[in-house]
Length: 306
Image (tube, rainbow, N blue to C red; front, side, top):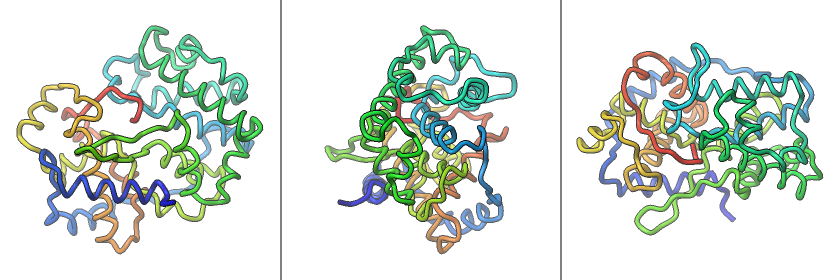
């Protein structure tokens, strides 16, 4: 069976070839790839929580299970100087540092109020129950399939980022398949980024991270649009610029995500894969946090994919 990263790669190329509202300026790829290569940082493993492997594995899997909500960021209570994502991440980091990792059994009992306490949000915010549901699924899968051990989840992948992404993609908490012109478009942003994070955060050394695709969210398309690599239909540009929420799964929203993934593949090819798609994604994501990109409206959609 074809691994999900290859399914994502093929599906995004297919969408990019048919897209009507989003296009890739292929004439810009070579120069932009060179610019990205100069900007690429030297990445070393991070440690958001302590050196206990089980706790770090639990942190990565739990964080990426709830690594969504960008359409809601304007409505949440943010910490000083932090984005929506980093606000949620900081709450999870503090919880793990102060109380340790949730046990799988605890995850199966989480409710909206528990996530509200961790993230310092109102329990009635829609994201809180969505986060709790995702983490309940994680707890159930870790218990049922891996004896309650998060490290065993990682070990089940046999040192392969692709295999770990495949494993997580089978969980409801990491589901992310769209449809375009009647055909499925697997995107699996969070399953793939969790595999990359396991490697980046030193939970385990994975041998094929370079074969993951970019992580299909809304920020990378925004950066590529601002930098002129993605060209949008004027009507779609107008809708984004006035802050209109895009319907999750609509053709325009799928095109934005898929064309960004395919554009990153073109950038990686232009660099003879000296940078992997995941590394290019990291450069673009970090670029998107700077004032030039934050000053312009980005595409937003309320969903549990990103």
